[in-house]
Image (cartoon, rainbow over all chains, first blue to last red; front, side, top):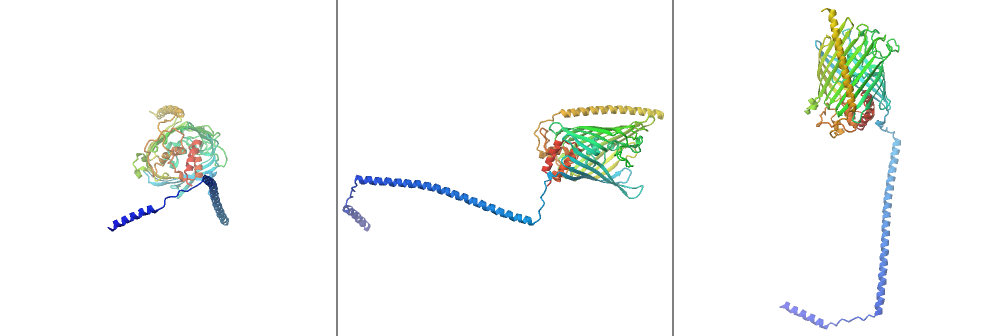
Length: 456
Length: 139
């Protein structure tokens, strides 16, 4: 009830108020006033526009000023950093001056002179048929290399061994031999001049197979017996590439004093392959005979794939050997080496020699060897001991014959060798083999050899 | 048969043997000359893409502790050989390969000059091998 009363009361009051209020009064403005007012508004609008334009220009100037300030601040920071670094360097320089100058490491690749020692060492145990086994060899064979500049190398090899004085006496004797000593001068890409006591390129065994390089402890019979290993003289050698697949031709030409006679005579037994070094025992400087010996080797090396290659070579030497110069010594060698992958290699040489003599007439000798090795790592068995083993085998023979008219001699030795190489490392080797001799020479005994070799 | 007859017969036999050997030598010389001519004119088989130089080197020292035969056949040579490939090819001809880190750059320079002369390696190939060894040498 009360709400309804209040509602009616409020509506009545609103009606009374609407009736009582006066009506709106219309304004009276002249045309002149309106125009004046319009002009004033337009001027004000122009002023506002001018002010806005001025403000835009000022904002642009302000932005440029801000950029300049930033750049200046950056430059200031850089300058401060430079000043700091300079100060630091100054401090370091002062400290360096106060302390001794430390040595700067040299650039190894630019060192122009260098001295090196390479070589090998061997230790042997031998058990020959019918004899006591013995630790038989302690061999130290260093090679000294001195390089002077880019193209000059002096190399000398030595061989130090010991041997019992028994049965003649007590104690032992140490021998120290100069194996080779040569000066090498690389004249250009195709010619190298070598002079001195040269390792002769009769075959490849002497140059590349001796010592620890061979996988069998001793040398082939024919290499030891038939051809000289070294000679005093001069040599030109080099290699000529054929194509860019690694193939090349090899050549060697040399002149050396050549073999001599142990007693000066022309008797066959006096042939001395390793003597005649140009200085006689009385101090005289002379070849033992009138003319030097000449020799050469020519070979071709053909790689087919990495680790697959074949090398074939032929070499020979000829010259006087007796003091009177009445007899010639000639030697010819065919050599071959084959690699079939990283695990297999085979090589061999055929050697023949002829020389005249006073007592036996013409003496003909020949011998050959072939040897092969297979690294069991090639079987991919992934066994550590097996992987380090290489099986080796060799057959070699030596044949001497002469016919002096009323006396003939035919001497033959064949040797069968089977063995192994165990690689402790790539340069520390244990070699073992059994050598079976078939010979009409009673001094040749079958034997078992163990050798520890180290190449450095 | 008297001793003189025996010696004469034996001497005749030896002369025949010498003649056979001389023929054998001549045949060998002819075969070698042919091989040289063949080798000089032969273009190696160019069948497969080459394996990486590193793989060739990794198969080196194969008889040492890390010996391992290559899993697949080496590719035929058809490009100019790299120093690593030449190193692998030449060193293994005579001895197990040495690790480049065993020597310094100056030492390798001396050793390569020695090997170049001893093994009659062409100078250009020797330089490539030396570069490879020095790049990987011990410091």
